[in-house]
Each structure stands twice: as structure tokens, then as C-alpha cells.
Length: 372
Image (cartoon, rainbow, N blue to C red; front, side):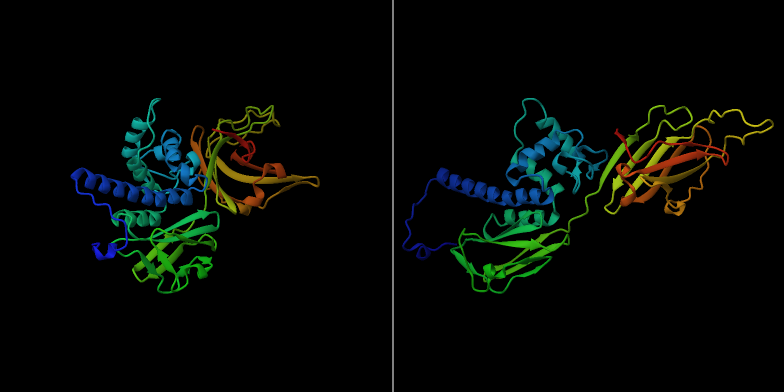
């Protein structure tokens, strides 16, 4: 509690009315929420780098009103799909809350996203360590030792600030800061540095790779721990129908769907189609009888065409598919392909074929197509 002696030498305005006291309390609380909200806004940018922290609320509203957003994926909770600016691809937003907010904000005359609703969505879909920091700020009513991290690629802007209370208008750093996952100019936060009331000090740090980052600060008034989660690899999937070349006849597959997921050094493929009827074959030698078109086998193969000719990749690059199919059965094949073999512009041609020992029905090139 502030004493009269601690106010010696200051100009003091005395507020005695109930209305005045309520106004001061509401103003202070609003300031605290606004300052703590900056932590969430930083967290949105840190988690979804394409979103400007100053535009976080409107970005979340756009994601909320985008029916393709991962905020609207099926299930009791959602997350992990495509989304506006990536929002929703990290964490899991409660679907019932998302649906209620979409009804509230996505009409033609809707208002801006409220602070409370923004907090609800952000705290479910950003780095949980940043959410913990925000909750500590709110619980302390924005008083005491405040810290925040703003990320821009591998650059980290680290901020530390004392926000006085109880007559304590400053504190000092009591020990050198500790950190993992990043390097900083620790001279900014050297032992004995004074943190004055509401005067922030900042340092530019560099993140070392994609591992988790932790900063620990100890001051005369307590400690502050700031954390960033490890950066998960960005996994993107594309679903498409292969491109059928001109003149693609009845003896080729026609209902192929490919789902290709980029995993960095390789692609994960899921190829789906329906086992076709027997191909129309030209007349054969007298007495020749083709094997029955049943118990059909499938395989995957790839050719590479350059100016020097065409070569076929070793078959052991792909798994052996042992399941057998009959006409009308649904075929689903899963396999991986190294990234260096996956660009059709470099002459790579990946195909599946289904049939018997004497003939098979091929797919078009599985590496190119039209998204669906």
C-alpha cells in the first residue's frame, strides 16, 4: 500500500467520490487488459508470421468468416487444416465456440471482433507458452515484472519492463540472464541494470534453429521466465486429379485422385482410384486366351526422360503392394517419394498400373494435375 510519506514531493489529486473511484478502477483495469493484450498480439504474429500483430483481431475475424479455415474443420475440436494466413493451423479451437462466433460476426452488418472473443480464439490457437505469459500478466493486473518476445523470422525482440506497484518504482537485475535456443547481447540486461517504472529495455536476439527458446531473468523484485515453443515443420497437402493428356483413351485410368503431402526431403503420396473393367485389346494370335480380368495386381513405377533418353527408377524405391482387386473395388496406395524425383518439369513421370500378368491399365502422370 502506498504511504503518504512515499508520495512526498509529488503533486497529489485526491479522489473522494464513489464515481471517481470507480472511474479510476475501470481505467486501470482497461489499461492492464490493453497492455496484456499486446502479449497475445505478439503471440499471434509469433505463431503465424504472416499476420501483423497490429492487425491480429481483424485477421482472426477474417479466418472466422472463411468457411475453408481450419477453424471450421469437422469434429468436436478443430485445427491443422488450411486457413486464412495460417490461423487455426496451430492448436485446437473449440468448434461450438467457433460456430457461435461465426454466427455473431460473419453477417453483412457485423461488428469487429470483441476483445474477449479475440482472447478466446487466440488463447486456443497460439503458442501455449505465450498464453501462460498473458495469463500471468492478467492475474497481476499488469503490475510487476513484464516481459515479451516479438519474433520476425529468426530475429527475436526481447523486452523487459518493471511496472511499479505498492510504492516500488524500480528494480534491478540481480544476475545475468539465462537463455537456451537463442543468443543475445546480454550487456543490455547486465547485473545491476535498473528497470524503471514503465520504461522498457529491449535487445535483439537471434534464434538458433527451430528448437524451443527459454529466457530466465532474475531481479530484486522476482523472476520472469519467457518461453517460445519449438517451430514445427510446415506440412502442406495438395489434393488433385492428374492431368489427362490429349487422346487419353478407354484403356487408361480415369478417376484417379492424388493427395500429396510435402514433408521436406520427401513427399507422402496417397493415390486412389476404382479398379477398371478389362481393357479393349486388339485381336491376338489364334487360340490365345487372355487371363481372366480378376485378382488384379497394382504397382507404382517412375521414368525419367532427359535429352539422353528415358530411364526407369529401380522398382525397390516403391513398396510392394500385395492386395488384389476386382472390377469396381476401391484402390488406395500409400508411399513416399524423395523430393528430387517429384518435379514433372524435370522429366519425372510417376504412374500406377493395375492389371494381370499379361496387361495392365495405367494412370496418367501422378506428379501433375488440377487441384480439387
